[in-house]
View (cartoon, rainbow, N blue to C red):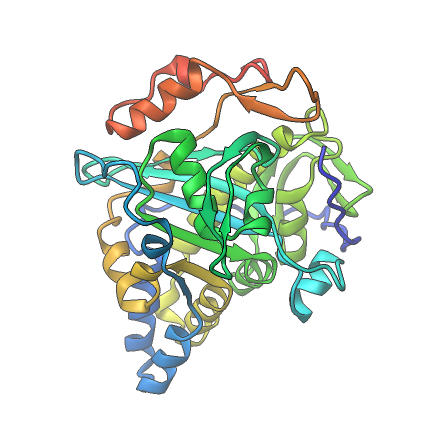
Length: 359
């Protein structure tokens, strides 16, 4: 399907990994952590400003206008979380191997639904190779881009920009996106390294010559470079398509959240600052979350969400009849899934089944 190639990276250690730390409830989320660590470290205002200035804000509401789905009928929230494969800049050049490659694509996309009560969450992954109808959008340069059918989902970001990705998701789902978060290659790698690595239970032996990733099945502690290769690998997983690696991405996300929450960050202000700096310097959000105080306020409202209770599913898809290398949303499953999210009700089991994977 897609032809992204990762540069060879170091092979993961085969030695016995450290025991996985016990998962704790999501009592301190990232936004709260960013504020508390500053107070715990006794830092001065310029330090706060440095972290606060790391966050890039995008005015999604202004770009999308009034033609949007209704907000949820409850106090629930919907977030669009993107992993960008931007190769701009020295750090991303090294990781992406793209050198002079410009632009970016939404390499990973999840609609995270937090129902009323904020005690659980559901993450719906949208396969990057899904064919969608891109609506008319206003691009980053202010020009209007006309609507187009049968566009690969992950190309919308590079062709028009993040606001158009939000609009595309809203049009295909009828779900109002309340907040937008994006992290790029370098930020992802640095965050994993800053917390000392993430332990994942590798489901099967992986020997991906395209990325240089070689892992044996079982618990493995991965550093930043290995983690990046892990969430991007698709060769040797499932059918070798994007669908096979979505499960790895979802698994890694849960492990990453649990690792961050299990660490005694307030006991080490220096390490806490390092993690906060890594988490913010490559973070882009909607303008409503583009500050530490806004992130902290939003994070406090999520204190009851436990990574262990977070459900991860894939948008039900079927292989396209014209291009077998692409997928389309499978009906009626996809419609049932989005309807449940719009109404903030339980997602039917039937809506979680994807014909393309036989699940």
